[in-house]
Image (cartoon, rainbow, N blue to C red):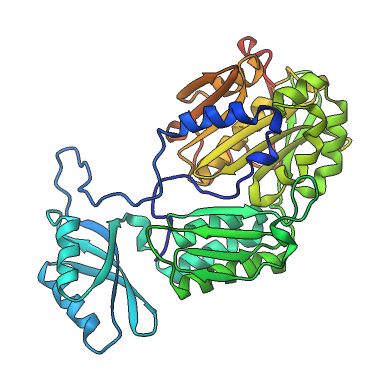
Length: 434
């Protein structure tokens, strides 16, 4: 029953330190702090009737969780109270907690029954710590089917683990702490991580030896949810590093072929070689600080716990461009770098389009790019998406946010199937894009 309980974007690690050197950290913190004041927190929305445009729906779906004493008749009292309000119980899960039991319901209630009234009826019947929010048709999928689907996605792609945990546990914050800092120093004192559950926080040993911290302040985790999360992480650990198969072969305007594929930490050496071929200006535009620090962050950027990476490579296997989709708290960042000799050919735009398609498939509401106001190439690439954009600028730092609810890509479908060959035509107004 625990699915992604909101429309906020999937979360994962705190990777900003791995992306932005300290030289400009103050500017970025100041800008992003003001930018994020417009964002919602993690508290569940107050129960409210949906806007139906004047049409009266036949009924409303609710997800409800309440705690009752573990004694005969307690569940029957809840069911009787719900039946008295003409509420239909579509599914039920129980989470034993010793002297108490957490009961989780999927309900269909009359359209005129408010969430507060439903909660009051349950409380009067013996329920405590009741939590309720609106549900949708996706909740009608039974829990074993949904969990098996998450396991299958995780088995195919190591980068799916943070998203799988989010869909398994609902509205929560997921942070990935590496076993070592970008500089190679042990993190967290170097002590082994032990799985633990502490009410609203669970800690899990990551497959790479680091720590996955999951927090859900508004709703305590149950031992059942903890066991499910541990099982998903254990599956990921046993399967080891892996990437989904498939790649696109793209034909550039001058007739040369470029392959776009997923990348991971095994590509760090080739990415470092690409850095060595990039000018200082290109590295500075991408990493916003001392260019000598760029190589230090590649292992984090290419790690599946921090997001997904696409590589553009030549027929000889040389990487000439990287595109990153980075989980950043409740936000999702996109970032690009294309080595100088391959710029102005539309490669950055192709990478960005695929990153946006992956963000849509992952359920992200928006993505943002942090760049410099002078980086006309990145600005042009974002504009080339054809999506609504929001610009915020301060002291030469520009944050461009694209709203994905207007994205032309179909969720769950790659707009450019693997193995296809396409011609890239670069419009004149996009010359200068990465």
